[in-house]
Image (tube, rainbow, N blue to C red; front, side, top):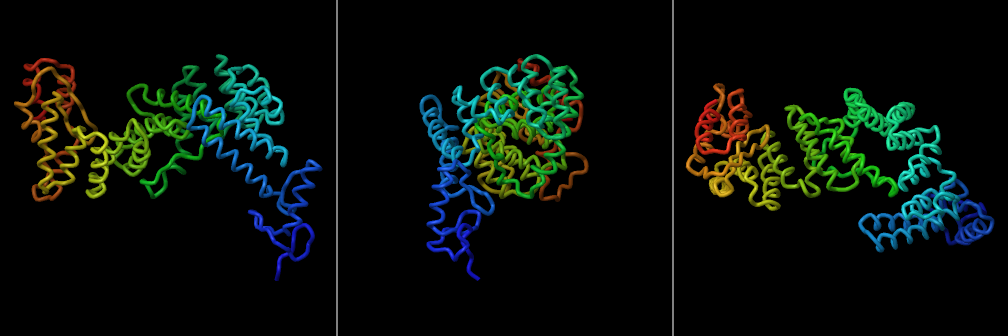
Length: 452
């Protein structure tokens, strides 16, 4: 049965199918667009009220200009945003929806943004924050979840941490509200309360971001509106700093930092630290691999992330994937000793493995660095002396096998080189070596570190 035009209810002539799936006559579509403009009515499908093709095209042009502006600065960025203003203004005229137009005007610092965003108090509050006026942002923020989040951030900027915490609590249970609550409690000195707020957010991310079976195609989440970029980066940097306090990585806060960051460098650092935090848990290798793969997408942590990813593949007995990750790390940093040693292990039994080990030892001797390659991480000791005389001992005895090692096991060498230190004596010796700067102290302490 033939479909009918949504306007004249006849069989469509010169039929045009809208993106929503409904069909109109070509002539009816022209009349609809013309009359909607004349009467200042929304240019939308008569059935489902989705925008008509001209409006969608303008929306796409505006979004393309905004995406282009993200990678620009100065006059070029301003020019791209002005293009977005022109496109979004036509959308606002056709649909009455001026939210995107107001956001771009606010980013440009235009006074017109205040009038355009009058019907969008939450976004206007963000604009006031962008313009450095948190007092007005707190005053106009409505009692909605997003409005309360805006108020919480504004009050924290004004030094009212208690008010910020109260506003964030009223906005619960959204993830953004939990993050703002954690920031407010942290400012109040309630570290445990802040950790609980961030931990509740971490539980949600465990159920979503990190339950995927794929760990190699991880990509950042959809970008936030342009107006919020700076806020998200500032929040992510603060969260990343707080997560590393106390010498123990806070996984919940690291996940929050990774999700909020918009600058690739901040996102990569958060992903790297999250991957290292998961690497400390034997049953979380998959999650660690996913985070490290994200960290490897951008500098400055690419080589280290790929090296750690190679370690995980070795622990999972996936030598092929380990070789790929480690070779990629060495392409980025050819002199990374830890990557050379791990690639040699991945190539165990092949001629190239011995060459890689010799190259690693030569680099250690030339850079005067001592490396204990253990699964818990790389420990570098720098000293003003030549260590070449006892580097062979290091290469063979840095990690000694446990009594339950099976000499007939094909993975015996891997176990010996990947097992973390098992005694307090070795850890103590490592700390003493790190603090030492004299050859005599090194020679006295190294046998203890190697024998325990």
